[in-house]
Length: 318
Image (cartoon, rainbow, N blue to C red; front, side, top):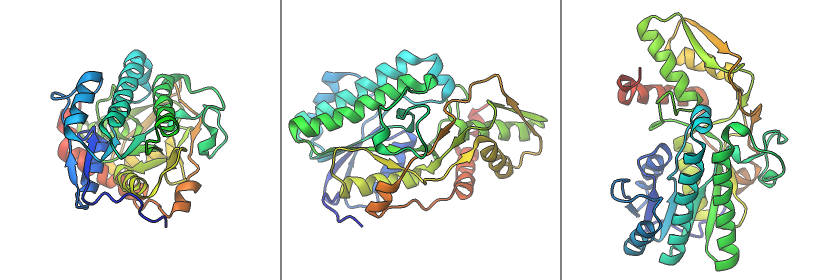
């Protein structure tokens, strides 16, 4: 296992996006470390505003920054709000990275997205496959913004000597996920739809696409553990893939969700709807070589995710 080279204990650690699924998981993980956790809400600081972001960082003086703030969503959200996905994410990452440099932040970790890889990339996707082919059209706007963030961290390492690193998680799920059906990813959408159908006695639930695409899923608490691991133990220019290195078809996933929720009806695949990328599986050999592996298997994680949904979000989804 890689030795600790940047211990977070005793540090001032800023988690940008602490109310989101990833940011809140990072905060939970950091609470087991003797560090000072810094957060700020959107009402107090709009990270899309350069002057405000740079001013806040200069006053807060964090030692480390996790860039978990982003505008996110599934296929529908990406396809219908391209300008927002591109602008918001480029501004957030640019302001935080440059602001961190100006404020003398010692370590920064930026999160990418598995949609950064080419649509038809060989599977599993290695880190060096970035920019080797065309992107998936349905989420290209988000992907372009995330690629810019990865490259910005690499550029700041080269030009300024900043210890800024990037991590590349696979598809995420877990506590704090978005269950708005106009913005959600596949797991929360399936959970919300099947739960509502179970309660109302609906006989059928619609699923976008054919069910054939294959996806890899990582519980957000596993991701948070990996991010802390990398923050403390990794320092290089390449982004690092984070995932299981295993995938399932959307149809297999749907069957797991149906069993977890206890829905007894049928699933209807709307084949006229887009599938997205045929497959997204990460090669996690680099991270495994450092000595880190996830621990929360998908069936167990879905139980946790569904329990959180019932307790925190089910009454808000119709």
